[in-house]
Picture 1 (spheres, rainbow, N blue to C red):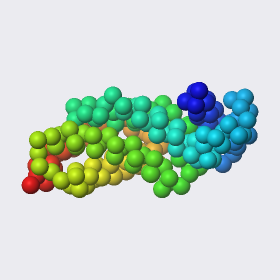
Picture 2 (picture 1 turned 30 degrees about the horizontal axis):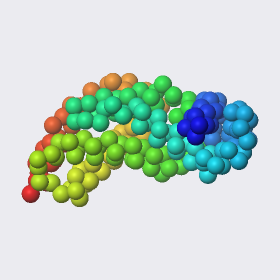
Picture 3 (picture 1 turned 60 degrees about the vertical axis):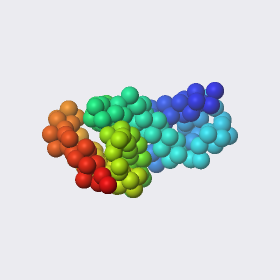
Picture 4 (picture 1 turned 120 degrees about the vertical axis):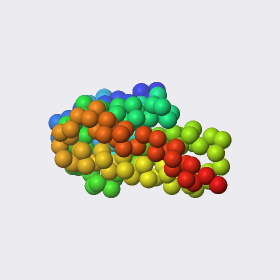
Length: 184
């Protein structure tokens, strides 16, 4: 029941974000839409921002969940771009309602998880410290999130497939090369 309630609250927030900015949405609006009371909302979430964070993390995780291997991570990242494009109005309202640091924090968390899984897979059998693997994952995390934020900030004009094609040409084989450089 808890998951269903969270998903209903998230769906209401997303519906409202397609029409207006986050500052204009209230807990009262969301719970009324879900036919719940405020106490139920606050049982699950501290405020609308924590609901938004949960929504973004849940949906981003779904977008990349089956693509967390070295051979499929680019497909996962493409799906994340496609999700943003498909939910453009929602994303832009959320993006311009929050400070950039908050949006970055959400994206960093999702992308880091994807990249550390890929790096750990490629590092099997190699003697690379956890610290170095984390450094490599962070490098890619910052590059990829920066790329996505710039794309969002400039109006999402370029097709996600074109971005991933360019990215693929740039980084193909580089994760393995990085690990080799850090191998002890």
